[in-house]
Length: 132
Image 1 (cartoon, rainbow, N blue to C red):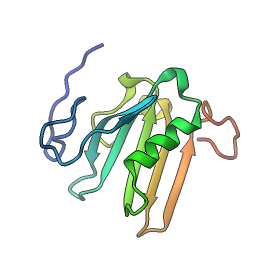
Image 2: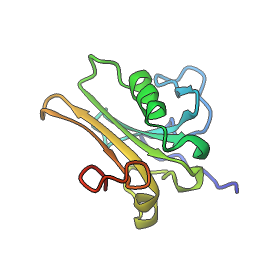
Image 3: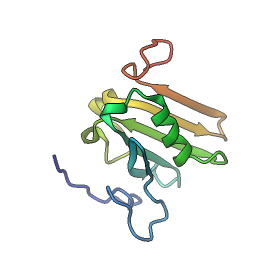
Image 4: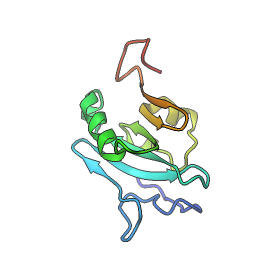
């Protein structure tokens, strides 16, 4: 189901394909790919919106592979959000209620704030102590 992608200031990478000469190459791997990377305001920090193949969205090794490729160990800030249905991947940083309900996982590292977390939806990790 096609939909239009409108460019917003600071979101020149909001395309499904990498742009020639872009400073942020859209990564992909076995079972996953970055759909877009969106800047948080004008902070220079980005949220990477990643599609996980629906057939493997419960395989946590796919998420680990994406995290390791997108967020190098020396990264000060990295945020990744994962969905298994591309139609729910937002075109902006804020999420609608439905996009949030369809979120499969969220990874955040912010060394300045001392934060390093990986949270799962209950459809990926049914343990109520670990899922959102």
